[in-house]
Length: 97
Image (cartoon, rainbow, N blue to C red; front, side, top):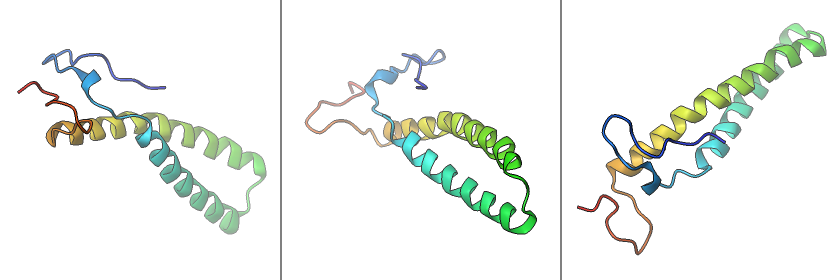
């Protein structure tokens, strides 16, 4: 699992106050899975390569896209929570303002 550092090294923002969870991972996996499936079907119907070509092409591409996309997706969700001052229901102000 990819996790944030406990604090921002530049400004000291406490990341533990935010709940980004695994939502970005599930969404990103479904999105990339649909895209890769569509591309694999297109390749199969247009060129009909051997099965090993699909394995060599799509398995690494999917893994790299999910791993690198996960960092950006979690950062985007953290930014959305921070900019909207999101917090758990019934909790005090997260930023202590």
